[in-house]
Length: 270
Image (cartoon, rainbow, N blue to C red; front, top):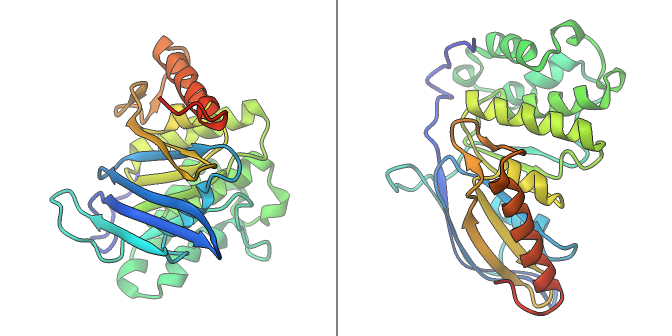
């Protein structure tokens, strides 16, 4: 059972409206004329071949890159503007601080906030997160002493412990073998069921995208652009994931794979 959250970090779900977004590196346009409407509380996977601008789009949405033109508008469930949603990022290489213990890594979002209101229940929230992560017995260890799966869980826990509005992830499970990767996908879906948050993530793994995402963004590299943006018919709001044994899951994986393959071969994405 999770502890009650303080009012300072109890947030409404946020959505995102992107209009006519262009992002360039020098003379090369990486994102071209992209428009999306992401509903509050959605889980969005960005997929496509290497070089199509997946991470560029993610980091631009996160405010880490400045677009050449276009607009990015965050809003609440009523459509009112949210100027600066609270966000967390899980990078491909996790970004855990090796000189801080497991517990100290989890405390980091509260330390960085540096306000009494946000830190009010931090110790209680960290205790609950350690238990949820299965890391209570390891809280005084260094991250280097954990297994790969434990480090992945710690990075996810650190991103979620302070109740962000938006969770960004850039291929956080790519270094894991298939079975560990599936276990972490299951774990993340379970955490989102307990801790609702809008999630936007990049993955090369089509099955991972269809399993975790309520909405799918399919990008092409040449010419740069959107193949399609669609709700995932295999995804369940109740479980915050799809059922890997459901025929609809397999059909959606096949459909996404076909769209990406056709776009790469120049035959279009429909």
